[in-house]
Picture 1: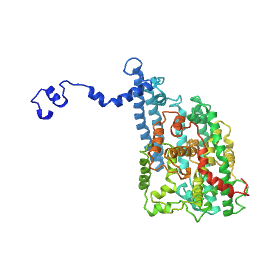
Picture 2: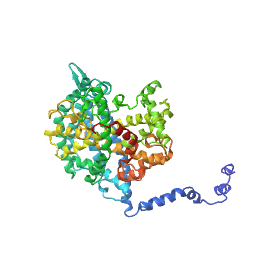
Picture 3: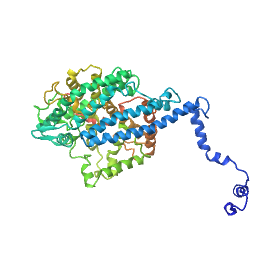
Picture 4: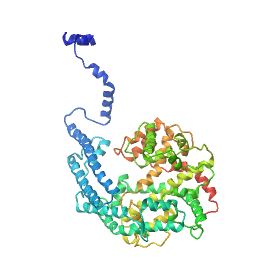
Length: 554
């Protein structure tokens, strides 16, 4: 009726035809947005936001706008650098190395320039969340642009180049780490062939990297001290809170919770390896030669599962053949993984190590593999369960001491406890103490075996992996509880649980805007890292190993 009037009547009459009134009124738009307005009122009150734009509110609004602007601009800078680093990692030419090195320098300078634009706002306080983001967006290290920073970029690139181009040579034939040497260690069961791969890789990398690593340590410490840290290790640990001793004490507590189970697993594996290679190669009571675990660093033992499987005639959860048979491609694997996240309510691309790993705990359960058609067996007895838990333990438990010791060594190097003259000695003392392994051939300080692990020359902190391998089970237990799971923890899958998805989303939404304890509490209800969930998950296997190891030296 209103539209039929066209322009033949004054607009108040057209308005009356539709609304019954001749005057414009804002009550409808207020009514429409009332739920949002109520939420905004509460949010602004809870966060002490000043409503309006007079007085100090102007500075606070500037700070908020700067944080948003910085995040947008910094993302573009880092994205551009990622392309250069990726090009070099996938095409190791001198040209790409030069471009990657220059990009690192340019990126550091660009980020400093962005932060300088908001440096005058660095002391503005709004609320915990924004204050945390603002501190990052305005932080300019005193060493920024220093000669040491530029020199460190060059040293890092040299170590990266030496590691990436490392080879193990046998006469005129040379082997790269992947797929050649990794393949030998995973598939060969010949003692001497395994020794060649293990020894050759270390000869081809460590000694060449060591001179640069000494310089790296010196530069890292210089830059750390310029930022008021005692050494580079202290600077790294500060990411986990201001109390460095409390953090390291907590790590030690976690390791001591898990050490008995690791030693139980180690004793079982040692017995099986002794049966395979002979008592002259593998001691009944001592540490095991490091090259026999199916992995270059003995950090995962999953590749020798065929030697260790508890019940060979029962269900074994290796779906590789089925993946090949069903024509799985990288794209299809991604789509299956993506569907899992969607089943929880939607994925966040920024999740860290533990978040991805906690999902894998559900994905690899027998029930879930059956649901997606990758496992045909319907066996669900105790022997099959032990096979499954053994497979998981060879990945999750075998890794723990290595994940713990890498930065124990590095922190000691940074603070001078381990001197350059004892780099290799200190490395093997820790590996024997925690992993129960020894080098299969004599080592000297002419060797630099830490350099055979990428994260050492790559300068990547490693304790994060130790933490993630523990808290993923803490997360899993909380998600399973939210999903209403009644099965043993090792059989729980949170697939299609919106309740578990909400728990996960609530934590992910916090990003880095809150202390990690807040994120932990959001998903688990606890503010401390705790190993009780991983102990619970593997308890059936630990009990079984105790029986199997009777008569063995633990």
